Length: 151
Image (cartoon, rainbow, N blue to C red):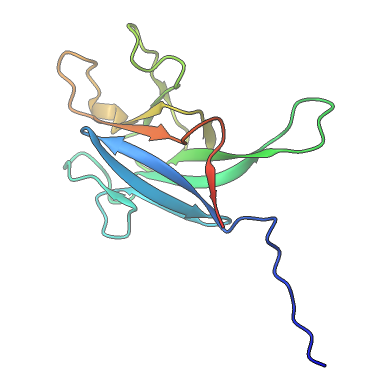
């Protein structure tokens, strides 16, 4: 009698997100354990054509957000890391769209979690605010409190 091996269906292969730039939505899938990139290069999941954007400007990965104290599980979170000398800014989702948005700089050594409706400012070096903005604003949507799994 032949036996069949069952695959682990409890762990998804990746997560789906939507990146929005210039009022256009770009769905992307980030496989578990892999990175996708934003930039000018042909290898990027979202190609940005500005001459101020690096060929590989931002790295996106899926990590785990630790559960609150006392909880037994964690949940997936989208992480962003700057890969460019021109810098990448971040406006947290809770602040995006309001007046006086606080833009902070992503680091190149530690990926930072993005909450729903966070906005990446690419490149940060040319950000002039709402009046004369030269940067591309990339809004990250996860479709709810947690990213939708790809099974």
